[in-house]
Amino acid sequence: MTKIIAFESSADETSVAVVEDGHIVLSNSVATQINSHQRFGGIVPEVASRHHIEWITRVLDDALAQAQVKPSDLDAVAVTYGPGLVGSLLVGLMGAKTFALAHDLPIIPVNHLAGHISAANFNQPIVYPAMALMVSGGHTELVLMTSENKFEVLGETRDDAAGESFDKVGRLLKLPYPAGKTIDEMAHRGKATIKFPTAMAHEDNYDFSFSGLKSAVINYVHHAEQKQETINQDDLATSFQNAVVDALIGRTERALRHYPVKSFVLAGGVAANSQLREALTTLLNDFNDTIFIPVPLTYTGDNAAMIGAAGYWNYKQNIFADLDLNTDPGLDFELLQS
Image 1 (cartoon, rainbow, N blue to C red):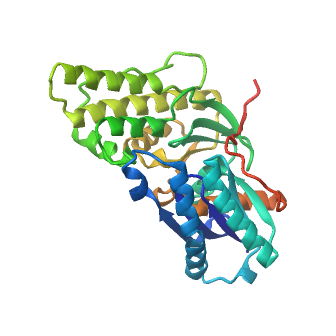
Image 2: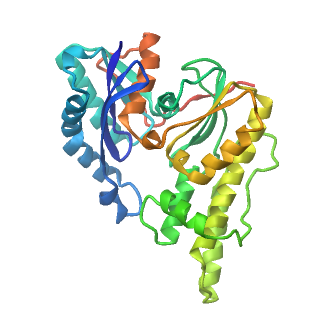
Image 3: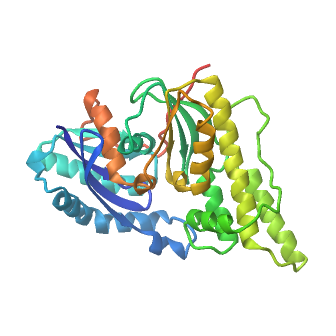
């Protein structure tokens, strides 16, 4: 049994977890900063870094206590080194290095995106070849995995990420940050009375685009305000969310038909969206040879348990780092070579 302690601080969640054999979560301590960022309508990097410094040792102590393990019981320290906010990443990285040095443990560098995908193993084991739809506030990608821990990007957003568009529309409607959950709830109450565009629907690739949709929503709201018309926000939320989900489903279906896989993973913060989960469940019913493995709702947001899961993949392949490991804020997977 391999026990890994993992550190995650790439954005606005400070988290430490202990994970056994890559799929058993012994503890997952998360300190969120949402209340501190809500009044700004998004993450303020300097504020995030200060909160990470304040919380990192607290969540570390809590994770060890929850898991009922001592440092001597651990086999390695996994840590997110990118992508993310550089100031935030540095806090988790220094915390992990300090813990590893103090207890003579090896350091495992983990790609935050791999962490999101690996969290599917908390649901059931990923079967290869596999494909993942990684949808969050910073990324929207279709990723092909021919084998464990091997990632190639089939398509990605050319502008805004899907989660980013939710937050920007939420800010327009004066909803609390982050707006994804609120818009999802509103969408279930409303009707699709507005036809918003689905960008790149007919292009011969697997890429996404959400900036045009965001602009269409902004223009619709401003036009209504100029005419002093009352907007039904629930209907607007339904129409907007339909357009986002349609875009994600359309590209996913095309990718699945061109790249047959044994399992399909839904990962990232937007993976918590109920309409997207339902639409993918329906879509995957048409692919009898493909298992649908959504990341459990508990682990869709940023957390250290997922870093422990991805860290286990690296541990098995002897992928370790020295104490001079640095952050890589722009880290991403490789594009598929055609």
